[in-house]
Amino acid sequence: MDYLLIDNISRKYYSNSCQHKIQYGTAGFRTRAEHLNYVLYRMGILATIRSKFCAAAIGLMITASHNEESDNGVKLVDPSGEMLEAAWENIANNLVSASDDELIHVLRETINHYNIKEDAEATVIVGRDTRKSGSMLLEAAIKGIENSKGNVRDFGIITTPQLHYLVVCINTNHQYGDPTIEGYISKLSNAFLGNRNAQEKKQYQSQLYLDAANGVGAIAARKFTEKLENSINIDIFNDGSGVLNSKCGADYVKIYQTLPLNSPTEPYFKCISIDGDADRIIYYYSDQFQKVHLLDGDKIAALIITYFKELLPLTGLSIQLGLVQTAYANGASTNYVSEILKVPISFTSTGVKYLHHEAQKFDVGVYFEANGHGTVVFKEEIVNMVHAAIKDETITEKKRKATIKFSRIIDMINQSVGDALSDMLLVETILYEKDWNVEMFDRIYTDLPNKQLKVKVKDRSIIKTENAERTCLSPIGLQQKIDSLVSLYSKGRAFIRPSGTEDIVRVYAECDDAVAVNKLAAEVALAVHQLADGIGPAPVIPNN
Image (cartoon, rainbow, N blue to C red):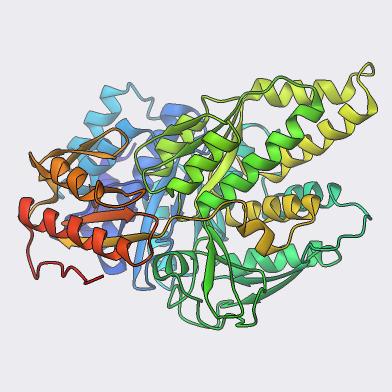
């Protein structure tokens, strides 16, 4: 590596003169775009080093997902399409926080520690969302990659899930699929179309309204509409002609529990919202009273589990099915899957990287966060077993048909990461198969009323949790206070967790009364304010 070149370019164009503190989180580095030039340069270098170490292609995605247009970010994608290995998140932090004088020392230290061959081949697959700052940040990343002797494969403006897909395809010698955007569209579309039949459907709605959050997902969705126009009709709104993530998108619909900008208001229209980089999805509709009904990640996961419970026995294959949730999962969904469907559930900390790894412990692991980010992962031996069963001439035709159907489901799913458009095709396949409309989908269980609040604190680090963030360890006495408050409400539940990026504590509460849940959330927030050095005005507890 040419350390002198790396150092000179860094000092001249990408100096770390910014005092803005930034940490690599679940979503990588994310902040105001004007603070990220030097970060992208250094992440380009790190991606090259990681590629040399893994002897495989690494992904670098420039996006800030559901954040506002003025933000941006970067995250690295490991060879298997998963999030960056945790140990390397610390390296990323050290590299970005290093002063200009320390940069080369940190690079040399990393290379020596991992015994990386500096002359090894390296490939970095690059993509970005539609943000205006993306081209400037892309240039910085490419400079970092090239100056550290890496090869760049720039796929331009693509969704985050598409980048993950490309990384997996390239690193598996095309076994996962063709490493092009056309290959991605064709693989998912063909699997979807293969599971359609000519049977008349009485309840299924082929019309779908898609809120693309004015982001990159609109581009990908248009390509799907061309492939699928004879099976589903997708009307795209918030298609890029408006402001990115402004009063639209999955995050907006989930948090505010309201219709996004430009949404159709006719009752019982089937609508979905995705986010700015198309890795989250929320279904919703409004009824005749203009009440908005959300079918979030919990309900999507429950629908998938329901379908798999029906389909898998028909294949005759012995497959262990499981669901992974976080503390944010609605209690009604947990009860439905564990008590009604009798499917095991594992809980993890918030963050896709935790859910993904836990899901891999099952033969078929379904994971979704309530915000709509999720997918299904299949063990390799299960995929091989399915392919072998299809070729087995001794099985019955009924089992063969069910196994082929399941095989197409596997091909329809982007296993590498939550993918809003892949998930959309999966949900539509299930609704079509069951001949359900959106209201019937909603009725699989009834969500418990829930509320989320934020409490500003002096220092979020004093909040320590365990048990997948469902139990507060410190400050001492806070969990006992939460328990005492929750005990006063029927089906009450509440937990708190510190933000990963700012000094706030997030409060979640639920119970069986839509009015009372607001009071429970406010009472827990007040307890946090009092026992965790809250700043600003104390939360106001509403009267019932």
